[in-house]
Length: 271
Image 1 (tube, rainbow, N blue to C red):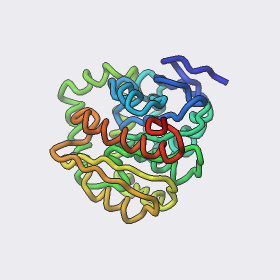
Image 2: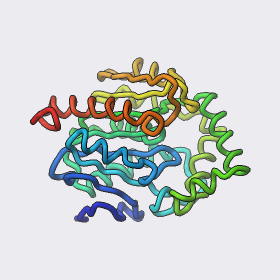
Image 3: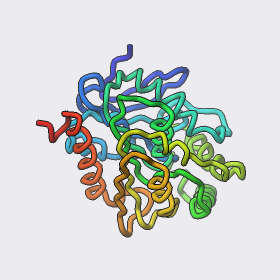
Image 4: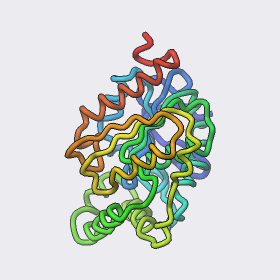
């Protein structure tokens, strides 16, 4: 059994994943598991995990998936099933490795989709709820256009240099995400069926000006989920509410977390 330091590398299967652990350990208290976006990493969450830990009196575990941050690289091209692979193969092993006992999954973009696939595909009583920031359940034309624009920026602007600050293998991180989404076969990607099998409360935070997705994603969740779905639409906010409107996002997520944990006799409101 691996012991968790405040930061380090966690061995999961054959990969080493870089992580941060804030607050009490997962076997000691409710824990929020944070799943980053398609170009994200531990560092790109900034101080948001720390503020969330304070606002909820929980532990917060943040990690970089393989191919991101300081984690092990992955071979390219990524399989078009990479989000299902993360949700159904890697995440169960990771939660066991950190001795996760109960808590909430918080995902952004690809991370939100991975959280939804996990909750719909693994009936895990330890997961009490999902907070999904700018989730994708189906592929939309607007998202593909934004991803194609990101590819052009990566080739001709300083985007590669900026991302290299966060990723040890920056080309692996970018191309693994970008080329998968731009593959014509990826147009068939659709995880809406997973939503019908989620049995815990779901929160969705969606920026009204999100360049990667529209309100259609929320409509799909409301149509497919049998569980409660709380929706927070943030006017004039794009794809990254936790960076563009951190205070509003913090309040929304911490309120959801505290309410869910209070229902289970835990968390900040339970004192």
